[in-house]
Length: 430
Image 1: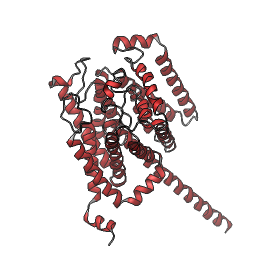
Image 2 (image 1 turned 180 degrees about the vertical axis):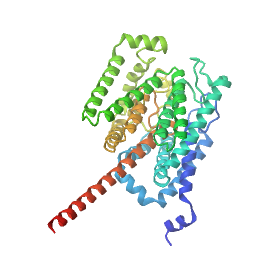
Image 3 (image 1 turned 90 degrees about the vertical axis):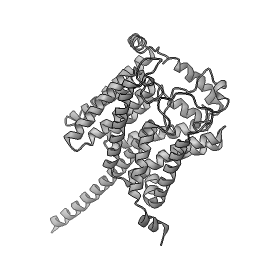
Image 4 (image 1 turned 120 degrees about the vertical axis):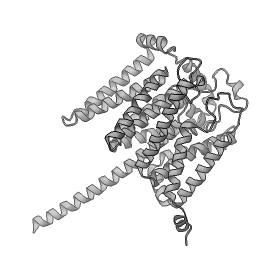
């Protein structure tokens, strides 16, 4: 008897996939560290709970890869770009200045990818949505209570909420992601009761983003509304055959204003400086981006190794002028994975947009756009763990899965219509 048949008989692998997915979603939002503790960890230090959790998730999901290897490798062959990018991040530990740190963190990224991939293949999509709904609702409730009763849940530098996160920008980012997930849940709700619950979650998460006083979070929220409005217009005017042209025109106007306000606008200067306490250099972040260019030029092609530039021995003193983050997810990826890794990531993003448009899943475009906007001033793009990594990889893989199913149905419909036409012609001849 083959190993695959033995494992199929002994293990309920669908349940294992569901357990893995539940644990991953929980630790992605709640983390594995003690809440409201903000002391900086020592260089290279590890969180034992974190290591145990991700090792368990890797081993149990790898078992599922073995069991469903035909389905997994078939999906990987069709999906390609995201898999190659993540494997490249793992391989970058070979030439990293601190290989152990780079490998440990890229291993976590790969584990997230593996758990999400096996979950999408083995678990009913609505079961995944149920798990996500329970956990983000619990997170929202705990955050609300902590803001009201725990003094540490208020960011002392700004007097605005930071909840279970380290500071207000992270808090805003977390609830932009929760806002996106509630929108997805509302889209797939089967009854009015669940639609009301998810609508409440949408309103509360948007409210938390607003009171966080985070410029990045608020701009991401506004762009989500604007993009959804544009694509809604596309649907309304579809019958008149001017919807796509009109929506693209509005999208062009929106992006033009965004660029104009970002580069030179007295109005934006007043709003940002007076209401958010920032200048048009995003509190000195553009200066950090310029300084990072010098570091990127030193390892331009292949980078310095995934997630091994900050929080490693000696680098705090060496780069004290920059700080401990580039405050831009794209700059971070270029620095760590070089031109090759950045190009692979660019292919992943472009491929995602193409698939979303072809399968007519416009909300997937909106979701990725919001995540990319968050990373214009924050460095959370394709990090090893955390809510944004989970949501990003889940949306990318879900989008690919939907696209492949859409293509399969489209091909089936083409074949069916072809056979139908042949039969019609034969009957006509008779």
